[in-house]
Length: 142
Image (tube, rainbow, N blue to C red; front, side, top):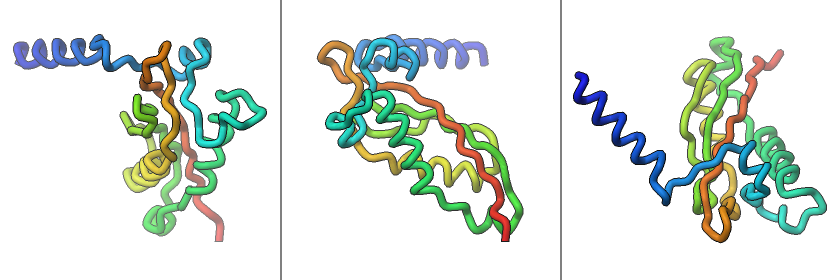
């Protein structure tokens, strides 16, 4: 068991420090001004960061569908989705926490539907940027 844990630790640390797999948090990316560019944000009067945040919020609201089974079972809660915009500009879900699995599935579906965008860059090299977004499910009243 200890050998297995050691091997997993070594593999994970190798992945985290590999030069081709640089991942910055949203906060670090914002400080450095290397945020991904949401489609049409390059023509916006807003800063790329503000435009990204506004478009992400709109995307979640527009694509949100309360799962029928969750309504039937009276499920509510907040699901937090950790994802990256990878070095090719696509959203990839990393982790999902909170809420029932039916709510988690819907939150993951919404994040995976984020449109492809220009990735964040470190110098001229595209990099992945990590995000975390809470999505709150409140049972609709009839």
